[in-house]
Image (cartoon, rainbow, N blue to C red; front, side, top):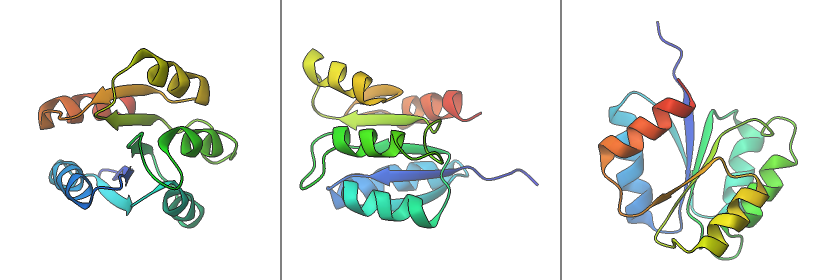
Length: 123
C-alpha cells in the first residue's frame, strides 16, 4: 500500500481550505486543516506533515511568521512550504523566500497545477 502523504492546508478562508482540501484528498493525500498560523503550529506539534500549503495574508499570524516558526522546528526544517496567495508582489515573494518558503503560487490556481507542484515536491 502506498504511504499516504499528509498535507497541512492553512488558510483563513473556510472556502479556500475546503476547495484545496477537496482537490488534495481526491488525489489521495491525507489533509489537515488550520485557519491561521497559530492553529497550524498546533497541528504540526500533534502530527507529522509532508508539506505545508499556506496562505500569506492571515491574522493574527501570517504565512511569513508561520514559515519562520516552522523552519525553527527540527521536525519541519526540511518540510516543503508552499505559499498560495492572491498577493503576488516581489517584496512578499522575497520575504517568503527569506523566511524559508519553498515556492509561491498565485490564487486562483487550477487543480492540475496545484497537484503537479505538490507532487513534484513530495513525490
